[in-house]
Length: 182
Image (cartoon, rainbow, N blue to C red; front, side, top):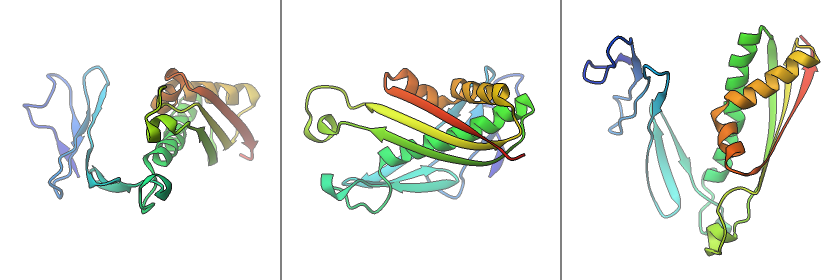
């Protein structure tokens, strides 16, 4: 539901809108502040390794693999992380394409991650970060090679989740193929 932000939440001189979920007891707000920073909140509750996550007006569930104690009743947080990377690249890519005057059609992604689970599962020394993440995209566009490379590089620069992975020290690979059909 789209609603006006109350005066107590508003930043003077800025018109703001917030998405609020009045149909759930878990309140989540997201709105753009004066400096164009968006505030996003979610709430999660669960037992064991299963969690229900509220990102109003949506909810989703995570679980994990039976091999490490989950019930595999929903995607793992690791899988949803890679899925979010795929979705964020497409959304950011559409915004960049619009800015560059590039027409797009179908987007296809394959995202693969390598994670040494010994830290996560066994508590061994090291870090719990991904070792490598490879994002492969096929995008239908009307762009020439130079425009397409600009679309790819600018999407990588502007995509918050690409930057999260890239800046975390993970071995990051970002391969895009231009499917010239438009």
